[in-house]
Image (cartoon, rainbow, N blue to C red; front, top):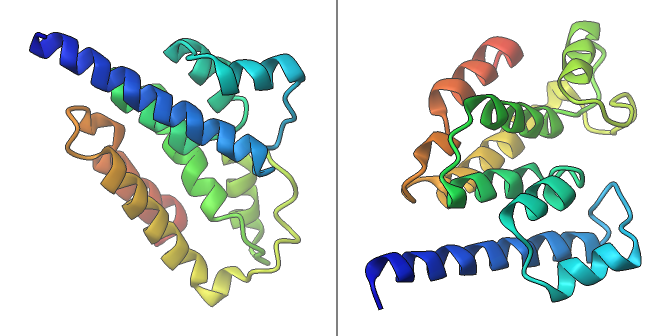
Length: 167
């Protein structure tokens, strides 16, 4: 077996693992959408194409971390999509209650999602910073060093956090 064939099998295995993560998220109710029976069957019993996994399942289900992992495995370096995914991940982690109207508007503009007014956690408590740091670190550990480091664009992530959120 050639090294190219081994790489291809490894990529297929990584996509299958990502498909399993998407399915697991749907089954545990961590998804904003409900899939119909045919979609659930496809997700659980067929090896989907990368395109279908990304466009039909991971992106519509708002599984942005899985979207980044798919782009990493496929070596897709579309900076616009990668930056959009990171912006949504950061915005999701910062969805906390805050009395600051500027922060509310900024978060709402980054990700159209349910109300950010009644999340319970206070922006001024600072726990969001640790959660955001842990999320970025966790994703970075998964993506970095696999030949597609552009899916972990520190030159975008750090300024986004520092300038837009005063982290």
